[in-house]
Image: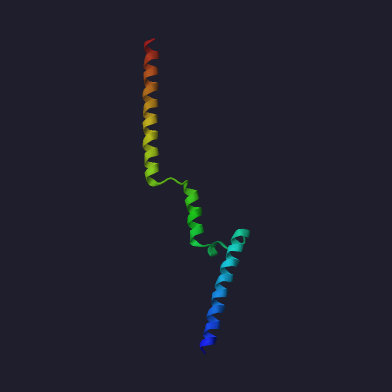
Length: 86
């Protein structure tokens, strides 16, 4: 029986390797169903949709834009006041 169990175990390993190879080929050709994709592929796709900014990066960008717009508003108010005096 020991030899038979060894053969079965070997065949199961080969089946797993074949299934993995088939899945990879289906993904490359675009014929894999969405539910069969590995989780890592789904995570990469989701990360690309978000734009790649971290929460801290978004916060810094937002703060910098607020400062730029505040400076622009202040500059335009100074110009308007100068035009009024002229």
